[in-house]
Structure formats: structure tokens, C-alpha cells
Image (tube, rainbow, N blue to C red):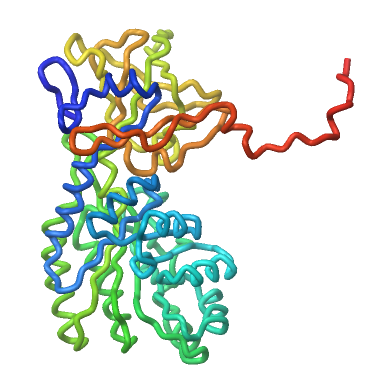
Length: 418
């Protein structure tokens, strides 16, 4: 979104205020041009013979977004059998979907096997059970390299105390299970978490994974996960994907020569692909001044946009109703009966009740983490593609809230307590 004279516009000149007028508020809007840009950046950065980018759909799972990725040639990274099912409905070939669950039952993995997708297992208990139940089904093994990828422990998932992956110190046990069950290991995988800045940290984890890959003679692919950082605030830094791509490609190509086979290099980017493409619009309900703070209370809350509260994440906030004017400081809060603060002491052009604000970087882990807390409706989603706006999820209503609730007959004849 850029400022064009006195108004903010999306790609193709689409006016977000017109989208709000048409589809209501709060509102999620995604710009496909940014998604396509990010996909091409990563695709062009990797100089290898065989490459597959698997979009991590947990970041944003609307079926239209999945179809966009399929059209670009992407595969799909999934973490639940429901995501697998949506991916199949979006038209993905099952072999272009990898299923990487955590702490699920063998029964759920069996469902994924029936779909025909790639299976990635991250603990020795399930690996042993899987090997006995499906000895002829190839698997990938998720390794924990014991690396803290970023500063936020909630988004770093490759450290020694993480629930994700099989410790690389447990490889003797893994080999014992593989030998005993006759499993064919077709891939090895790692994912160290989000906000990777230093290529050296990523490459050190990659080196651990490559050393483990040498121990399996029949691999087809190596999956390095993702976790690349995007810029969230003015002057923020991001992962230099071009530098990382150059260095990992050089190391991977050298490994393939040593291995004697052109393996497929796989990544599973989510946030990197969709974060910057998303915008969340909300309306200012009230300007409330206390003894120490000026609050801007909006018609949304942690039920729609939980990342600032859950991860202490920073999202730039812009007054799109008044692009120009005197700047003031506001603490932006929501209408949920909890402490749902979007930003503290944020500077923006002076707000008035009824103005619309935009929260940037709202494409990843925003709508997908939304809920109906306080019995609030989840908002609509709109996709801007080639200068046109398309509704891709309708706003919820009371019927949606009550759809799966069953009114038990035991209360029908009970008189009210006085």
C-alpha cells in the first residue's frame, strides 16, 4: 500500500476505503502482486537443478490463496489432515504436498497416507509405529538441530528444549527403527523457526542436516524449512534471501556432487510469502484520554488479530482516513473484554472517531489465528488481483456462530429461576 497524492492505494490503484465501504469493517485484504513478488524472489535466489517451494499454508489457508500458489508452481506444506484436504481441493497433486504434523495420533497420519501425500515424522515413537503399519510408504524425518534461530522463544522451534523434531543426538535410535521396520527414508527435514537474520545460523543448522543426510543412501529431497524474517517496522531488517540463496545453493550443489545424485532442495516459506501482502483495516470507535494515555479504541481485538498480544509482535499502524496532518501518539486497543493492545504510543496522523486505520504485515498468522471470542464475528477477506478486488471469505453472522451448537432439549421446559 502506497500513498498516492492524498490517498492510500493498493496495487492497480485499488482504494482500500472503497473496499471497506463495499465489504464492511473490520476487513482483511491481500495483494497478490506482493505474494507473486516474494515467490519469484525466493525462486530466483536458489540456483539448484531441482527446487520445490512448499507454501506453509498454516500462515494463511484461504483456498483462493492456495490456488494462487498452485498456479505459481508451488507445493504445499501442511500440519493437519484438514490442511491436506483443503490443499487437495485447491488442486494440488498429493505428491506436491508434504504433511509435517506435531504430536498428532497415528490415526491422523494414516488419513494423510490415504491421500497419498509425503509424510514427515518428527518423533521416534510415531516413526516406529508408522514403520510397522506402513513399511512400504516412504517417509521424511524431521530433525531438531538444537539451534535458537531467533530472539523470540515462541517462534524458535529448533532449540534443544523444543517439542518439534527428533534430536540429532537420537540418530542411532532412528537408524535402529529404520533397519528394524524396513522403512525407506526419502527425505530429511529441519525447521529452526521464525525471524532468521543471520545466514550463518541457518547454514550451521543446514550443515547438521547435510551430515545426517549422508547416512541415508536413498534420499530424494532435503527440506530446509523456512523462518525467514520480513520487515515489520520502518528501518527494520529482513533476511537477505538473495545472499542466503547464493550460499545455500553453493553448499547444496557441492553436497549433491558428494552424494552422487541431484537431490531436490525444498523450503517451506509461509510468513516470507504472505506477511507483507496482507492488510487489516479497522475503524476507530472512540478516542479515550486518561491521565497518562490517549487510547484509540477500534472495532476489533485479539479475536481478529492476536499476534501483538500472543508474540509481542510489532505491526505498523496507519491512519488511512487522514494521510496528512498533525502527528500524535496513540495507544491502539481493541473492543474485547481483555487487554488487547495492538500498539503502545504509536505516532500517526491525528485520529478522529470514525476514521479507519490499517495494520500492516497482516498476511501471515492473522486471520488464520482468528476466533469468535466474545461471540464476535470473524471478518471478511478480500483478494486484490491484477487491479480487481474479489471477495474470498464472507463476513460471519449470528447463524455462523450458532451453526454447530445444539440446543439440548433438557432446558426447554425448565422454568426460570427467580
